[in-house]
Structure formats: structure tokens, C-alpha cells
Image 1 (cartoon, rainbow, N blue to C red):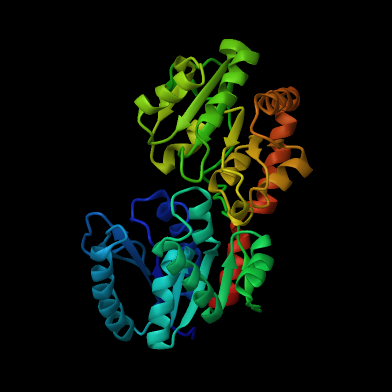
Image 2 (cartoon, rainbow, N blue to C red; image 1 turned 60 degrees about the vertical axis):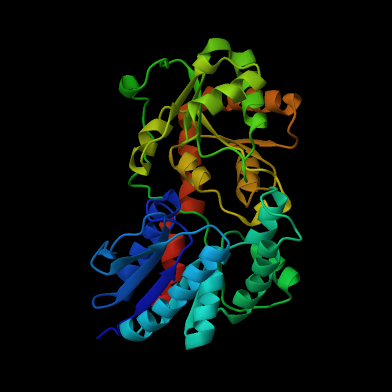
Length: 393
């Protein structure tokens, strides 16, 4: 008879966030299938409006707590949370604390020091330095100094470390001067039963024709993502292809902001369709695309991240325009000739990308099959299954 396994999963996201729905829950369902009946996974989320704890699947339960931005209120709330979670761990006979990304890892580290439980770090990447690189935090800020300190502490304590990219192993050994044995690599994987390449279905959109060349983008602007540069690229593409070029943006950015971006780049806003849809509807919009774009800022720490969108683009058979040195993805795109890697953020390079995409689309069906095979090799959930089986099997 398989021994019961009880896991507390800590995240820093709200339950409805795409990072929970697409980047956490699918993996928890894999773990659920591994640990078997009578085991439980308790998922902690931080919600603007917390609700009663609820059962998500037979073995997965959501604990919802109040979110506060960093400050006195959040410190007080986390003091209460630690008391609650300490007692909860004892009551539910928790054996592992499994944390998604390093901000959640801080809470996991403290709880494991208090209880002696095993700490599992998932999607481990340099969050503190990334926040400085994208100008969200200052290097002399309390936030930065605290998280940098706790990134090292949680890495030292962890029994298992799951990195988002291969380079993170060498980086963490050098940056934190810690050598671990139980490192794993898990990029953002894709559910191929949901992301299936198909023909454009134009019934639910207007302004797009079958012969149009469509660029799709699922994501945000600012923060870790480029802003004006994206619309400068669109302007170059529009100049080259004319009104055959269209853009589908799956984003929650306000249309007024999109129009301002267009104005700043001298781009006709009528070529852009803006939608904010549930993740379940993303595939049918991606199916409209001929290629995707991944405008992550090419700052040093982004070598160690794992953009979710690239795997989804690839699963749909779409070539991708990407900035340089992004995870392993820039190298995968270049070595497999399935898109274009921008060496610089200039109009000349944007035109080079447009010309490359144009040439790739000459053999569109053959290209699509090639890209899907790349997706299966680099983004299959079997990668995650092997890792979680090693830890919890």
C-alpha cells in the first residue's frame, strides 16, 4: 500500500491568475497522480478578496489568504499566516513544503526552519536581480536586499531545486556559492490536448482575412516585457506587408494604452485586435496567427526564465520572433530555424525578422509540423512527470 503524502504548496499569486491556472495547477495534477489516493495537496494563494478554502480536485485543496503589497500590513498578515500555517502543518501532517518561485520560497524557508520539513523549490530563478534589471526595484531597496539574502538561504536548505532553465544551475552555484545535488530542469510545459494547430476560424473576429499575415502575442507590456519596441516592430511589419499584416493581442492592457503605443510608433491601430480571454480560449486565438512574438526584455537574468507563451506558440506550429538570450528558447529558435532572434532592438533588425518570417512561411505546412516536433521535445509534460516522480514517487 502506497504511503500517504501531504504537501503544502506556497505561491505568491491569486487563484485566478494565469500563473496559477496554467503554470501551477497542471503540475499539481501531475503530482496528484503520483502521490495517489488518501494523499493531499494544499495550495496557498494570496487573493485580493480571500474566500473560503475549497476543494479543486479529489486531492487538491485551495487555501486563500489576504494579499497586501509589501509593507507593514503585509508583514502583520504574514505573521498571522505563519501561525496559521505552522498549526496547519501539524494538523494535516504535512511532509513537504513546495514553493513556486523565490518570493514564495521565503515563506517556505521560514516554515521549514520552524518545522524541519523538506523544502522543494520550483521554478527557481533570480527574482530579486530581475526586479532591479527591469527597474521595478532599486538595488539598495529593502525588498531587494531581503530577497537576495533569502534566495541564498532557501537554496541552501532545499532538498530539491527545480530550475526553469539549464543555465540556472551554474548561475546559482556561482552567485550563491552553493553546490547542490538534486537539481532538475523544467521549462514551462504545454498541454498538447488543448493547444492543437489548426486552420484559422474567422467566425469570432472581424477585420482579419484568410490571406492576411497575422502576428499573435499573449501577454503584457512593461515590467519584464518591452513596450514601444514591440509597436515599432509592428510598424515595420505593416510597412512591409501593408494591410495584409494584422495583429492579435491577448492582453488585459486598456485599449487606450494600446492606441497610445500605436500613436508613438506611427502605427495604424485598426490593424490590431485586442482581446482579454480566459486561458481556455487562448488556443483558438493563437490559431489565427502565422507567427508569434516573445518580447521579453533581453536583460541578463532572463537567460534563466521560462516564457510560457513560447511553448504554446510552438504547440500551435507558429514560428516566433524573440529577443536574444531568453532562457534556452532563443537558442532553440535559432538552431532549429523556426523564427528569428533579434540581435538588437532596431528598425533594421525588425525588418530582418519580417523578411525571415516571410521566407519561413513559404513552406508553412512543413514548417508547422517541424515546430510541433520541437514543442514535443522541449515542452512536453513528460519532463515534469519524471521530475515529480523522482521527488514524490
